[in-house]
Structures are given as structure tokens and as C-alpha cells.
Image 1 (tube, each protein chain N blue to C red):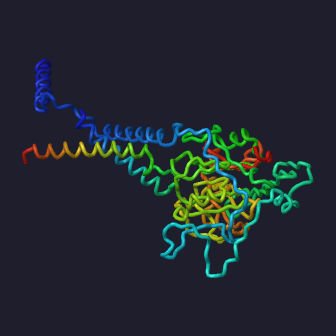
Image 2 (tube, each protein chain N blue to C red):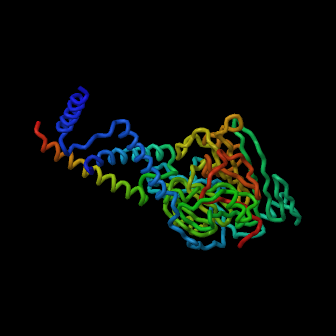
Image 3 (cartoon, chains in turn yellow, cyan):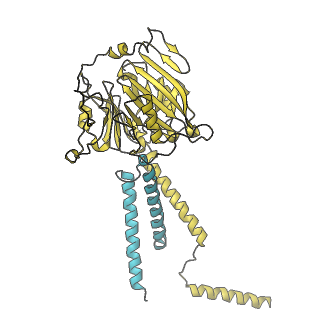
Length: 368
Length: 66
């Protein structure tokens, strides 16, 4: 009986195989198919990310040196933000100063006086001694003070900076060279460059677009969203992409240029709509401009319930307006937002921070 | 084997594309889509996969009796 049962089973199995056909492959169970597809999706995304922004490429040891002008830019006192004119006749992306219904003061042009900031900010500098504490650095050439403040449920750090020379305001790349996929901790880059104060930059290396001008050298001239330009004369300007004029900023002497955004003040006024959708509460790093030689770095901690939830772009814009800045610009925030003072991290970065491709920093070493 | 794998590869590519679209929508700074050689290469491969799969499927439909 047992043998007969085995024969029946064997015949049944063979009939089943015959019904399927000799060349018909066995199908995987559906759950396994789903798992396999998900694994392939994950692998595909990882491979894409590797080639998109992880693996180093496009390495440049130096950029195109830009000429340093001998005169300041011609600008009106209110011309710190450049936006595209709303009138149809100027929709061809020309750069315009901020026209309003009121009369604009006549532009002024002055020759750069290297001692002008030293005299203007004399009350911020020392007579020669160096004062250094955990939150302050003052010398005869530079003043940096850091305060921790709270606004609502957000803790932020305000670093006030007075310079005597624009070349004290510098930027640095991870690994010391320009290139996609090159990253390092903000603190490590800062220490390598003897930075007094340093903050996350615009993470230029994560994409292949965005104006990159660093320490007077042009590395990339592909436009991407709002741009922040720091000129040799110390003035700072935010520009919407559609109003950006590369030739003009090169002619007027760009010292640094960043592409992350969005700009946070429009003609010195707070904004409620931005060229960005990353508006929810987040850690933020941003830079503010008062006047040539006077700037501030703002670092907002966030995503840490019970400590700091972060700020929206609207709140950040309002903060810079309340601080009295005439221009402000958002840089890489989130987990990238890190502020350092000498060899210490000042803020509490979300998840300890992340490696990024560049920093902006303040140095008391003067021109190299 | 290849015929069985093609629809799955198209599905993988579609999900990847949707992922890029969503990420770029919320965070333009990532700039996954458009203007970079990596995405252009991915788009070319994905397009070819869809093209081959479509042609094969159409041929199968025409060969199969109703």
C-alpha cells in the first residue's frame, strides 16, 4: 500500500510538471518578488547616490583668480538685495537695484581705504592686546563675540563679527581642494585653517550647480537659486537667480559667493515667502550683513525636543530683521548646521552634525 | 530570464524616479533631477529599459491569440 501511494504521488507530481511544460520556470512566491524588488530599489538608490554626490570628482586645486578692484562698488544705501523687476520691460533678468516708490539717494563711489574699518570699529577692537574667552575674541584687527539666545522654542547662537580687512572673512574646502564628494567635519576644517569662528557653508559639493567663488577665485559659474555675494569692499548682496548677472559681480569685485539660499531679507525687510520649500522648523545656519566690515553668523539648533525645535524660514527672516541686518542669507542647515569657535563646537548639532564640503570662517591672520 | 527581469527593472527605475522627484520637491538643494550627468545616465538607461519592455510586450500581445 505504501508503495502504491508513493507511485500515485510520483505520478501526480510528474503530471503537474507535464502540465507546466518542460521549459516553464518555477515562479518565486510573491512576497519574495516584492522583497527582491525592494532590495533592487535600495541598491539602485545607493549606486545613484554614490555617483551623484559621494564619490570624489571634479577636483580642482585652484580656481580662476578674480581681479581685485581698487574702488568700491557703486551702490545706493538700500541696494543690498537685488531682485528681478516686476515690470514687463525689465523681465529679461537684468540686475536692478531695489526700486521703490520713494526717491532713491544718489549713488556714491569711494576709494577703498584699508584703514577705514579699523577707524570705524575702533570701539570694538583693542589697542593691541588680544582678549580671548570662551565667547569672545578681540584684537587690534578683529572682534568676535558669541551669545546664546532663545526665541520661542528655538535656541540660537549669534556671532557678531567686526573686521578690519575683508580677507579676514574666508572660506575653506574640505580636504583643502575644490571637488564633488569631498567632505569633512566643520570643526576639522576650521582647525586646519586656524579659524577663530567657523560655520557650515553652502555644501557646494552635493550638486553640480551653484556659483562658487572662494577667497577671490572662481570655481563654478553655473547658476542655482538665490546667490549671496561678498565683495572686496565688504558689501554683501543677495540676488535671485533670475536677476543674477555674472559679469557684473565679477566686474565689481566678488570675494566670495555662495549658492544655497534662500535670501532672507528683501530690501532689508522680513520675508514670508521664499525660494525654498524647506520652511518647517529646522536647524539653521545663516549669515547677516549690517555694513561693510560688520557681519553676523546665526546658528539655530533644532530637531531636539526639549532643547530646541529650530526655526522656520519666516522666523529666521524676522530674526535678522530684528537684529538690524540689511541683508541675510540662509546656508546649509539641518544636520549640517555647525558653529565653531577655535577648536570647540559652540552649538549642539543635530545628531552630532555631518561632514560637509565647505565652511566660511573668520581669521585674524590677514591676507595670505 | 531577461524578459522576466525587464518589468522588474522598469519598476525599480520608476520608484527611483519618484524618490528623486519627491526629494527634489522638498529640498531643491539636493538637485537629483536634471542638469547632471549621473541623472542623465540613469534617465537614458531607464528610458531604454522601458522602450525594450514596451516593444516586447506589444509583440507578445500581437502573437498571443485572443
